[in-house]
Image (cartoon, rainbow, N blue to C red; front, top):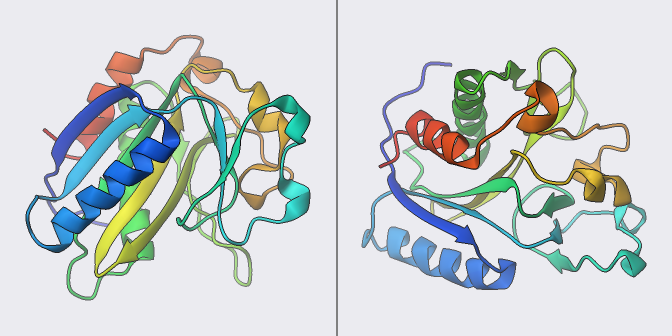
Amino acid sequence: MTMQERPLALVQDDLVDYDKAMERMAALVGERQEDERPDTLWLLSHPAVFTIGKRTLTEHLPDPTHGIPVVTTGRGGQLTYHGPGQLVGYLIVKLRTGEGVVDYIREVELRLVEALDKLGVAAERRDTPPGSELLTGVWTRGTGRKIVSIGMRASRSVTSHGFALNVDGDLTPWDLAIPCGMPDVEMTSIAHEIGRASMDETRTAVAHAFEAS
């Protein structure tokens, strides 16, 4: 896949409560639909929270006694975990003529593979086998672990939601539920794969891969 240039405006925050982030994201989407703002990448992190898509199965949910809130969200995809040490990127992008949200997700995967390569992690996207659940995200090439979760949707040709890249956070919450609708998936992080990670370096590499400034 050859990627065309698609420069994005970069917005950065540190830790933002998930519900507050959803309110702001909705406002950004509205501005983009009215051409009041350019295509935008918003980088941030969230306090610990599980988010679930419309099709997440009840048996995939975490035991509520663990105390991590579970929030239903309007994106595509299944259950995912957000927490400190994870870089979340929300993409508010107007799709091109003839481009669907799945087409754009393929581009997002490839840009994240590029960013991870710069950070020293060999990674890859995966094609979905015929008749299977859509495989979205990025996996490590050597160990076959999932390092990026992706869930997006589009409304009036503008995307929302985005990706979650595990940098150096606690991975144990992923074991409390069934992430991404995949019982056998093993989640990982940059720090887990190569023994070190920098959130600042990761933000820089991701912004560069998305032509965001």
